Length: 416
Image 1 (cartoon, rainbow, N blue to C red):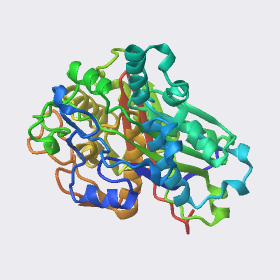
Image 2: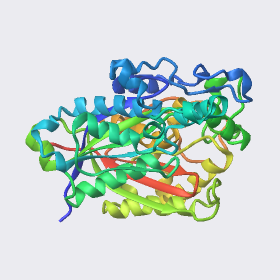
Image 3: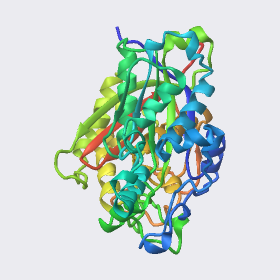
């Protein structure tokens, strides 16, 4: 018998806020975390804006010595993960350490460390490369550092599926707990790719918006004038827990995880299938996983990156899966405010989806001023909307053709 899985803790690091409730309020206010870049010398780039966490101070969570021993993406993971664990009120020392673990996603990992040490190699020679290079840049470093911090000896691995990484990681955590492999898993994603290499690579493949003169209006999902995504960074980490385990602790349950689905386009390394066939399959698999019908879904937190092809493909996929109900759905893309944090985005967006359920409010898609005729669903333009939300789906799609969808629902403590 499948066990029920709930969410008991939430943590975020974003360019708009590093605290969950404050982030939610700023999202509802239509504020943007996009600005001229401050963590790099932006003058050398064609694209000079993004969602860098320019006010980041790791010493709130780490000593200065500890902070120097981990890459920026691991710092984000430790911060958001620590906040999520605190929010969950969980004492891992009182648990069987082999029944708790970490599954995190990251599309790229320690790109900051890779670039800085490569520069040192070229400029000063191999003997000057730091002995911490590999432990800092490896993709699994974020999750490993969280497991060390909390003594979690159960499942521990990292998922790399580009921009679907966090959602794939959360899907794995859901299945692991559902089938008895763990009681608690810290999961989500972290990314810190706003670096010279990251910016250069994305701008030169023409994936990024070039609106240097109006950064806050650059990310405009489903708008006819969209011209690419906005690169950002951060982390979204959640605590997934088996229902009876959470009830025994008497902790407040944030939401229930109901289903998960994934697929691969297997067609192009960067471009989505134009009809959204793979995305549709991920969504339908998520519904099937949760024994749900299309009409059960109230709101979709869309992948919605503001790319010309991607937004049209997701719209086509939504119509394919939901039929006439697609026009009754509330849809929005919070990337319009936060930009695209790649492998972390799914975690951040699931946190916001949970807040949407709890507050009965659909967050807006800002900058949606001239709707694309091919994107004709209700994308909640520019203003949040009150609506009772019982079941919500969050979509994440990534380079390589990766598609992942996760479904969460309101948890009724009295009705179970």
